[in-house]
Length: 225
Ligand SMILES: Nc1ncnc2c1ncn2[C@@H]1O[C@H](COP(=O)(O)OP(=O)(O)O)[C@@H](O)[C@H]1O
Ligand SMILES: [Mg+2]
Image 1 (cartoon, rainbow, N blue to C red):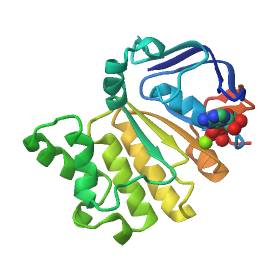
Image 2: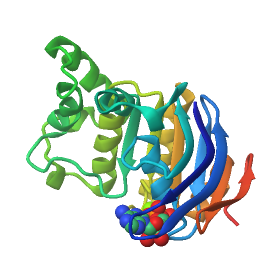
Image 3: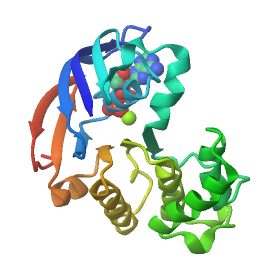
């Protein structure tokens, strides 16, 4: 589903964020990307959705070398890869329903289809009773659930979660992990960065550890260390 071949990334200021990364993530896997701050985790994620281009190397997502995509092909890539972040990035003046619907409106989905898919996504994340709440009326965990609903409403092949529990307390974080696990069981490939060793140790999924831009460990059913 995601293949990287000898990928390096140097930012214009000279920072070498990733060095010679080669990695294959199969369809349906759940992978944790761990490592200290500055290790290159976010850069890794950004390259998968073409927010950043590698300096060298090849990145294949869903069978296509995305390094060579034309500008007009990028939106389609981004529709096939859902994203969630530590700060939920919801539109503050829109309701729960509208925040999720917005992800479909920008792709010119029909109203009928939007009316079918948005409630289904909100039901999956357990927020069907908060359709008309605005973000400030929701807890952090609920806001993250809205952003998860938004990220999966158009059935992406891949879900990238960059420290999705970074702003949440442990109990709430665990609820978010169960949800990501459920989404993964339904067939979506999940790649998640985290600093939370308890979560990594309890989930027993594949763990890829980065340090200073290099992969230092790649364990099936791994632990944080
Ligand atoms: N836009 C940028 N411009 C310059 N340097 C950057 C940029 N983004 C990240 N970096 C640098 O690249 C390295 C990896 O950063 P990042 O991918 O954000 O790591 P992580 O997510 O693991 O904390 C760091 O040294 C960081 O300072
Ligand atoms: Mg980061």
